[in-house]
Image (cartoon, rainbow, N blue to C red):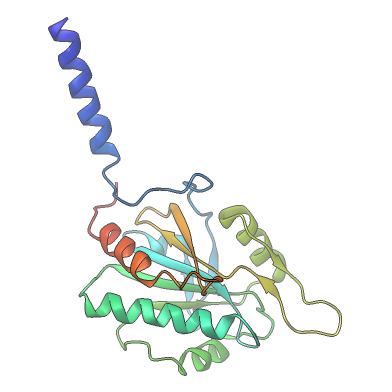
Length: 203
């Protein structure tokens, strides 16, 4: 009986050690994002492998967006500045455009220049893929939609969430990228989660 109890305790300790994160994975996530190969703001190739070993916040935007994207990008900038103030390292931001025909690397770089982003921040602005790629990538990996503009409009429908990805490429959770009704943008929650996750070693 004592040996059995001892074995149970040891097993529990081993299982706990395998899941030491204080950041809970949302039930609809826990998947690793698919491999991809796209182009960043420097006109250089960026892949899924380039994300390994670092915590990432990911969103979907486009530069001609007349509604949600500017405040989303302003909020992401607030997150980055707070992380910098706290001295958090080993994190980055990934923004996929949902209008790749318009958003060239140069256009995306110009877009971000209007925001107060710390100089050393790793913020990847990704483009030069087709619409089918970004639609499928968003749906499969983040359970969200990217829909073409209605006739006579250039406004793409897309998610306004920020997604947290760990050092192994696993999608952990999402956050509203904007204020929602009486609920303010969850700046402190995002910053705390990124800080905690960045302190953990990749498995």
